[in-house]
Image (cartoon, rainbow, N blue to C red; front, side, top):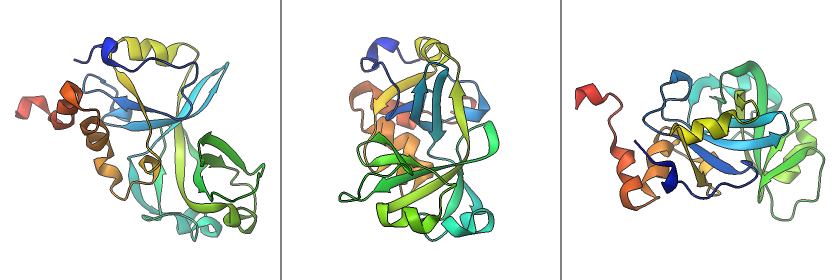
Length: 194
């Protein structure tokens, strides 16, 4: 469906990049997902799905973090790997000092150490979201899936991880690519119904 030649040039790291599922991706875990890379080490790539909000309130599971969780203050399905694990993604204040509780991903966006006391982290943040589970790829696996046309790699915008309408993020990311790529935003969820 989408040629890999249309994908922006690859970087050595996927950290801070959006991995956007193409309509050809057949894995229901990632149907119409937007994943942001938060880790790329020798053992593979780690990311969280940004556009799968649940109805489970953060307060019910991580009460101490509920006040910091952005709107909607719900858990997000970060991916199928370790669904009982929680990953915090936060937006650091521009003037916040360095802290080991915050690991930069892209600019002021970073992962949070949820084992810390929220009161210690709160002064650093303008907002955060909590993800259950994550998306993970073994070394070379993600590159192979990109080559097969399952994913496109795009630059993230600062607002992407905190979209007020996360269910619309997949279409929004495709639309802003312009040209023929923007047409993918209108691809029917079930082509047989077209």
